[in-house]
Image (tube, rainbow, N blue to C red; front, side, top):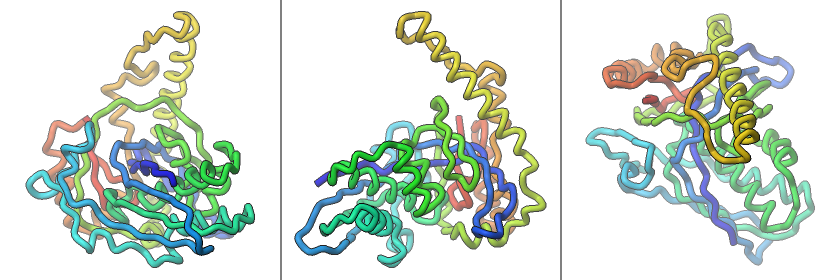
Length: 308
């Protein structure tokens, strides 16, 4: 048996560059950022050769549990009702699909029970389903001694969903192609506050309604963010070498000052989601009254986040 944390993410930048008609996927570039909000995934072998899944939400005030992540809903509480956890059918569940894919690919004739303790709302843009799938892949790699490395796991992950590849390592990363091509970046330092609008947005439907002609206008800003982080990575490597691995790292971005990098953050879905859901537009307005340096949408919504 193994238990893993399955983290959420936000997108510091998200550009939709067009649709690939052959695959049906949209080409994107994005900066993923893992945040310390977690589901908990437990995997155990069972005698019957089948995949079982059970899940339950945790009803409590997450603000006390997750240091550095503040989740606001009504009176500073995040109390999830059953509707917020309308888990997909078993055959559509990403965790089940991940387990089935591993079993079939490596000819493992063993049964599994996957237990989920949910904190990440579904269809919120935080990547909970993708993260759960990645946790199952990593867990089965350990349980069944498959010896798969990160790149091998990412290739399998991309067959489940494009965000799944990011969650194999998490952290901060640059995602390209359909989001599954991953370049790891130094961690972005910033306090993130989540504002749960209570609305669920189906990613596939959001992509279908997106006007790609209005997208990609901020793609150069994404490249500036990535380049700044790449140079920070080189700077850290250089300083560690000079100081014989002694940590003497400055919390700065070389080409883009930290107080300016926030201005580069963006999301191509914001116009569509605010237009389609006036309530989210109202929530954006409220969030922007705070001292936040950036207020944005995560993924295709409907979670709003602020960076301080």
